[in-house]
Image 1 (cartoon, helix red, strand yellow):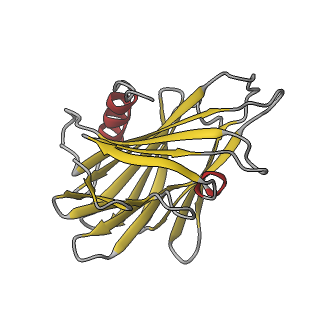
Image 2: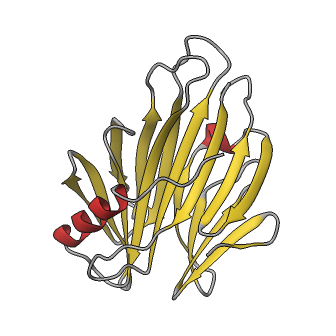
Amino acid sequence: MWQWDGSIATAELGSIQLTVATAVGDRRVQLKTREGLLLATLWDMPSVSGAPLLDTYVRDDDLVCLTGPTDSFPFHTQLYWTLRKVESSPTPLAALSLLVSVRTDLLDTHPTIDVTTEAAARSSSELSVLDGKAYVVSLREDVTLVDFATPEDCAQQQLHAADDQRTTIERSLFGHFLEKGVIRSGRLFAALYAGEVTESQAAEVCEQLSATELPLTT
């Protein structure tokens, strides 16, 4: 369950800590060790992180953040970071999903949200899951990240591995035509493991996460 202090949500999950700050300019998941070492930043969305905050709260395993429209991103946005439990083997240290829902009061819009995951990685690889792409990123000898989105939600996904061992996953969420008053939603998924995982294990957890129920939206 998320621990909420009014501005920052924290989940202590064994040797791993997840933190999300919901203030303007934040709204990304930071993956840290218990000692505070930053391992990765998940799902940074600049167009959403700069939007005005309307409301934020914790509801059991959901951290909810509601933002208003801006001139550059004229959409009402709802964010739901949900801690997940999956039955895959090996059991992940942590599993997480992010539901992003947008609606607009304007006509003829095409919402596109650029989403970035960044990590200092020992190695990284790409595999096909459910006709989409999943990325397996070794953060340390004892921590591996599996990051996944379906092609229905993210038609464009790319992995960039730089010479300085910085690995970046870039996605475009949505991009389809959105009618006035219609709500469009998409999800992102991640699992963290102690040690290495095989491709079949990574594919299994992605399939299980994609089958989880949507959080109750407002």
